[in-house]
Length: 207
Image 1 (cartoon, rainbow, N blue to C red):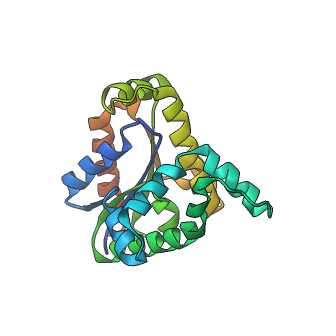
Image 2 (image 1 turned 90 degrees about the vertical axis):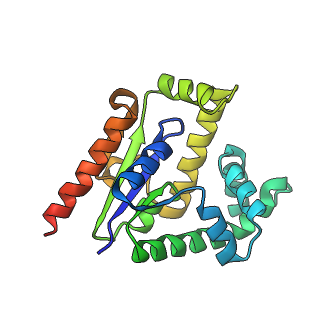
């Protein structure tokens, strides 16, 4: 049976790096930004369109407009063209995640994978978080972003809204995770070590 690790993360917490290192250590397939190509191929939508849509998801305004449209009020906002395919892309993304989990052991970062694979027996769902000050430092130095504070709030809110919209659950709720790690106090390497150890423990329990 394939082993699955899903990682949800606050922006700037190093969750992507942690997930990538875990995948390398365990020899698992790694899914993050590379899913855009898979979604484009399976949905028939243009890769650039999907990339733009993912950027729009991080903007609170798109969710404000979505709420207005769901109440039957017409909006001429330029981002409204993304609403039409939003459900389609989530369905395709869910199919890709499930198919990948059937093919091999995987590490998934974001994209509601913890919810999509919530009933998958051999899975561990993890949340990576960190103190805001440390996340701001990482966004400023490693990501070279000047408006780090606004970006931090925008991306986290976008991820939260996206997750809540499609899962009917609350992003960050501890009930949804097996392990929650503070990468700010633990450090990237220690988080990787703990996740790898948790996977080994879960494997032993299933024997």
